[in-house]
Image (tube, rainbow, N blue to C red):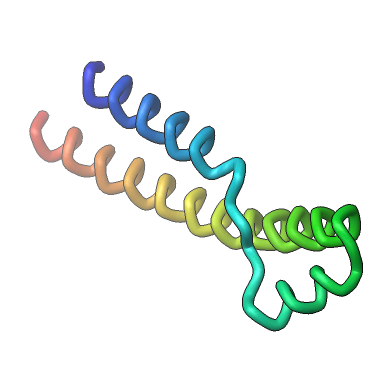
Length: 78
């Protein structure tokens, strides 16, 4: 149980520490600077939103694989 709590605490820390992350390449940064502050923030938020979907899919697949292999190990031990 302590391992699970440590992993969850680490994940929460990473999420909270990444709130001020800029997700723009150099070309997007120049474009955003020309547009102004509000559109630049909206562009950055959109980039982060689009980035979240692939990470969620890969995380879900990884979790399912981990859960499946963990279940097989438990069956082998019995």
